[in-house]
Length: 140
Image 1 (cartoon, rainbow, N blue to C red):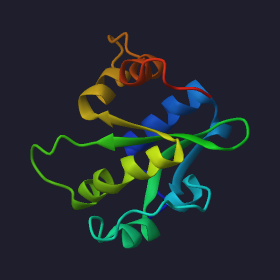
Image 2 (cartoon, rainbow, N blue to C red):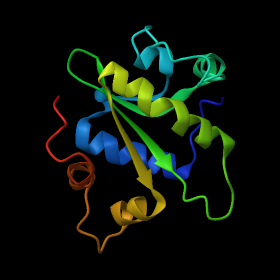
Image 3 (cartoon, rainbow, N blue to C red):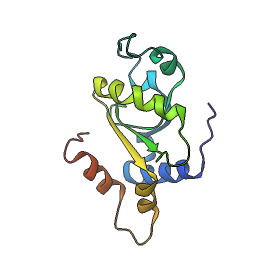
Protein backbone atom coordinates (compact mmCIF):
# COMPACT_ATOMS: atom_id res chain seq x y z
CA UNK A 1 0.00 0.00 0.00
CA UNK A 2 1.19 3.47 -0.86
CA UNK A 3 1.70 6.11 1.81
CA UNK A 4 -0.08 8.64 -0.43
CA UNK A 5 -3.63 9.64 0.37
CA UNK A 6 -6.24 10.90 -2.06
CA UNK A 7 -8.10 14.22 -1.93
CA UNK A 8 -11.04 13.15 0.21
CA UNK A 9 -8.71 11.34 2.63
CA UNK A 10 -6.63 14.52 2.88
CA UNK A 11 -9.81 16.51 3.54
CA UNK A 12 -10.87 14.11 6.30
CA UNK A 13 -7.34 14.26 7.75
CA UNK A 14 -7.60 18.07 7.96
CA UNK A 15 -10.99 17.81 9.66
CA UNK A 16 -9.62 15.32 12.20
CA UNK A 17 -6.55 17.50 12.85
CA UNK A 18 -8.74 20.55 13.52
CA UNK A 19 -10.90 18.60 15.98
CA UNK A 20 -8.30 16.44 17.76
CA UNK A 21 -4.88 17.90 16.92
CA UNK A 22 -2.19 16.56 14.59
CA UNK A 23 -0.40 14.65 17.37
CA UNK A 24 -3.48 12.48 17.95
CA UNK A 25 -4.00 11.32 14.36
CA UNK A 26 -2.07 8.36 12.96
CA UNK A 27 -2.69 7.91 9.23
CA UNK A 28 -2.49 4.44 7.69
CA UNK A 29 -1.51 2.62 10.88
CA UNK A 30 -1.02 -1.11 10.59
CA UNK A 31 -3.68 -3.10 12.39
CA UNK A 32 -0.91 -4.71 14.48
CA UNK A 33 0.03 -1.21 15.77
CA UNK A 34 -3.60 -0.36 16.48
CA UNK A 35 -3.88 -3.58 18.51
CA UNK A 36 -0.58 -2.86 20.32
CA UNK A 37 0.99 -5.93 18.74
CA UNK A 38 -1.69 -8.24 20.19
CA UNK A 39 -4.00 -9.23 17.38
CA UNK A 40 -6.94 -11.16 18.82
CA UNK A 41 -7.45 -14.73 17.72
CA UNK A 42 -10.44 -15.30 15.47
CA UNK A 43 -11.76 -18.77 14.74
CA UNK A 44 -9.86 -19.98 11.63
CA UNK A 45 -12.82 -22.09 10.47
CA UNK A 46 -15.16 -19.09 10.25
CA UNK A 47 -12.46 -16.52 9.41
CA UNK A 48 -10.17 -18.34 6.97
CA UNK A 49 -8.36 -15.30 5.55
CA UNK A 50 -7.97 -13.36 8.79
CA UNK A 51 -4.20 -13.76 9.27
CA UNK A 52 -3.43 -12.81 5.66
CA UNK A 53 -5.72 -9.80 5.93
CA UNK A 54 -4.12 -8.70 9.22
CA UNK A 55 -0.61 -8.90 7.72
CA UNK A 56 -1.26 -6.11 5.25
CA UNK A 57 -4.22 -4.12 6.53
CA UNK A 58 -3.77 -0.45 7.43
CA UNK A 59 -6.46 1.63 9.10
CA UNK A 60 -7.17 4.90 7.30
CA UNK A 61 -6.98 7.07 10.45
CA UNK A 62 -6.40 6.05 14.05
CA UNK A 63 -6.97 8.50 16.89
CA UNK A 64 -4.85 8.03 20.00
CA UNK A 65 -5.29 9.41 23.52
CA UNK A 66 -2.74 11.26 25.68
CA UNK A 67 -0.94 7.95 26.39
CA UNK A 68 -0.71 7.18 22.64
CA UNK A 69 -3.24 4.36 23.03
CA UNK A 70 -5.49 3.86 20.00
CA UNK A 71 -9.08 4.81 20.88
CA UNK A 72 -10.88 5.24 17.54
CA UNK A 73 -10.42 4.08 13.95
CA UNK A 74 -12.09 6.13 11.20
CA UNK A 75 -12.69 4.69 7.72
CA UNK A 76 -14.71 5.70 4.68
CA UNK A 77 -17.65 3.51 3.72
CA UNK A 78 -18.72 3.25 0.11
CA UNK A 79 -22.34 2.78 -0.84
CA UNK A 80 -21.66 -0.11 -3.26
CA UNK A 81 -24.08 1.37 -5.81
CA UNK A 82 -21.72 0.99 -8.75
CA UNK A 83 -18.95 -1.37 -7.66
CA UNK A 84 -18.12 -3.68 -4.80
CA UNK A 85 -14.64 -3.21 -3.33
CA UNK A 86 -13.36 -6.60 -2.17
CA UNK A 87 -10.88 -4.93 0.22
CA UNK A 88 -13.77 -3.11 1.86
CA UNK A 89 -15.77 -6.33 2.15
CA UNK A 90 -12.79 -8.00 3.87
CA UNK A 91 -12.34 -4.97 6.12
CA UNK A 92 -16.00 -5.11 7.14
CA UNK A 93 -15.68 -8.82 7.82
CA UNK A 94 -12.75 -8.56 10.25
CA UNK A 95 -12.11 -5.02 11.47
CA UNK A 96 -15.22 -4.36 13.62
CA UNK A 97 -14.70 -7.54 15.65
CA UNK A 98 -10.94 -7.04 16.01
CA UNK A 99 -11.39 -3.47 17.26
CA UNK A 100 -14.29 -4.38 19.55
CA UNK A 101 -12.18 -7.08 21.21
CA UNK A 102 -9.45 -4.48 21.79
CA UNK A 103 -11.86 -1.90 23.21
CA UNK A 104 -11.26 0.47 20.29
CA UNK A 105 -14.17 2.33 18.72
CA UNK A 106 -14.81 2.04 14.99
CA UNK A 107 -16.46 4.72 12.90
CA UNK A 108 -17.25 4.72 9.21
CA UNK A 109 -18.07 7.86 7.25
CA UNK A 110 -20.36 7.49 4.24
CA UNK A 111 -20.17 9.62 1.11
CA UNK A 112 -23.34 11.47 2.16
CA UNK A 113 -22.00 12.15 5.66
CA UNK A 114 -18.70 13.36 4.27
CA UNK A 115 -20.52 15.67 1.88
CA UNK A 116 -22.36 17.15 4.86
CA UNK A 117 -19.08 17.68 6.71
CA UNK A 118 -17.65 19.58 3.73
CA UNK A 119 -20.75 21.60 2.91
CA UNK A 120 -20.62 25.27 3.89
CA UNK A 121 -24.42 25.27 4.28
CA UNK A 122 -24.45 22.27 6.63
CA UNK A 123 -24.45 22.55 10.40
CA UNK A 124 -22.86 19.09 10.66
CA UNK A 125 -19.44 18.93 12.29
CA UNK A 126 -17.32 15.87 13.01
CA UNK A 127 -18.12 15.87 16.74
CA UNK A 128 -21.84 16.01 15.98
CA UNK A 129 -21.45 13.09 13.58
CA UNK A 130 -19.62 11.14 16.30
CA UNK A 131 -22.40 11.94 18.76
CA UNK A 132 -25.01 10.69 16.27
CA UNK A 133 -23.09 7.43 15.78
CA UNK A 134 -21.93 6.74 19.35
CA UNK A 135 -24.05 8.80 21.72
CA UNK A 136 -22.08 9.14 24.94
CA UNK A 137 -20.10 5.87 24.52
CA UNK A 138 -16.83 7.59 23.54
CA UNK A 139 -14.44 8.14 26.40
CA UNK A 140 -10.92 9.56 25.94
